[in-house]
Length: 133
Image 1 (cartoon, rainbow, N blue to C red):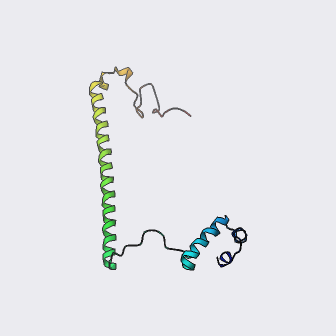
Image 2: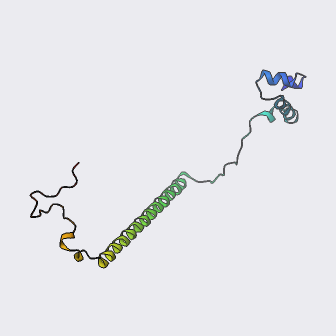
Image 3: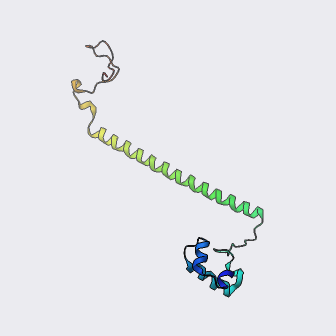
C-alpha cells in the first residue's frame, strides 16, 4: 500500500501481486488512508460466541440430557412404526378371514381341490415336487 500511496500505479501493483483488478488496489488504498495498516488486517467475521458461564459439569449434564432426548425420540418413533406395521398385519388377517368366510374352500368339488404338496395320490408313486427345471 505504501508503494501505491507514494505514486506507483495500481495496475502495475495488481499485475505484480496477481490481483484480479487494479480496483482492488484502489479499494485497499482508501482503507489504508482511513484506518492505516490496522484496517487491512483480517477481521473476525460472524456472530460473536455467547459466554454461557457453564462449568464442565453443567455442559456434560446438558449434553447427556440432549442425548437422552434424542434416544427417547428414536424409541418413540420406532415404537410407532412397529404399531403401524402391527395394525397393517391385523388388517390383512381380517381381510383374509373375511374372504375365507365368503368363499370357503370346502365348497370346491373334490376333483377341483388344490393339490397338496407332499401328499401321495393313489395314481402317483412319488410326492409332488414342483416344476421341473
